View 1 (tube, one colour):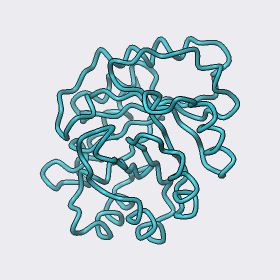
View 2 (cartoon, helix red, strand yellow):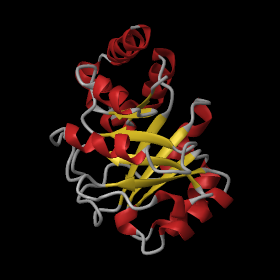
View 3 (cartoon, rainbow, N blue to C red):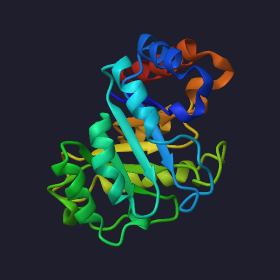
Length: 220
């Protein structure tokens, strides 16, 4: 069943503690954090300390997407703060396998993220450290960028690679109840959603609608 990972940076930042509780009660499966450096991507929304502050409030997995250059130094810090999953960008790391190994040895699931324009390499090279792939379905420039559904074909095609059957596939960018079936159709395992979850401040009803669409698809 497709899991929903609300992107906390799209929520009301002044009330994050309340937001975490609302997301948990609404049925969110994972909490997604974007950590940016203002260089690899132009925005800087939240920092690492917020993960430490929010960690005691929920048992939901914390999924940290490092949109940074040279992310290695952050990994042990995030492990101490309670992150469960960390993805690094293929475009930002000269030695991705080494960095994935560091995440894995730190006790977290290691993911490799890809911008829309980046083609997938041979993923077997990154085993046994690779736990999930994160496919961006918007350009990581500013929030609210255009959803790019054709990028989802990377999931469909990537799943055909031999030897990575246990690797999970996560998609991130512009996913709402109206298009979430695109992710289902290509075999995604996790959907990151910002605007789809927080639109109109209606967190509970937005997540409920997304899950209703997913469940209806599975029933047919």
